[in-house]
Image 1 (tube, rainbow, N blue to C red):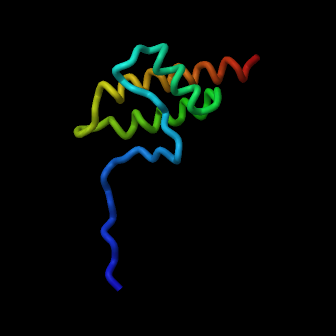
Image 2: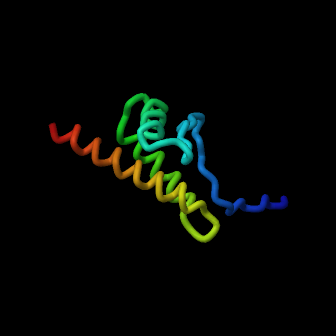
Length: 86
């Protein structure tokens, strides 16, 4: 039985949900849309944005997307920690 070729290309698994995140939008609008897509859960939003940033880093990635997604992920991780410590 022949084997299927392994797809080693980078891709972002949407898992049925879009982040509604666009690098062209302003910071507040990006963060509001991303948080709304994850039903207000800071941790899930941060993890999704971190995954997006990781996919877009590297020699063939979009550095602007990676930088903005990582900054937004860091923001949501911080918000999650603040909420948890209350």
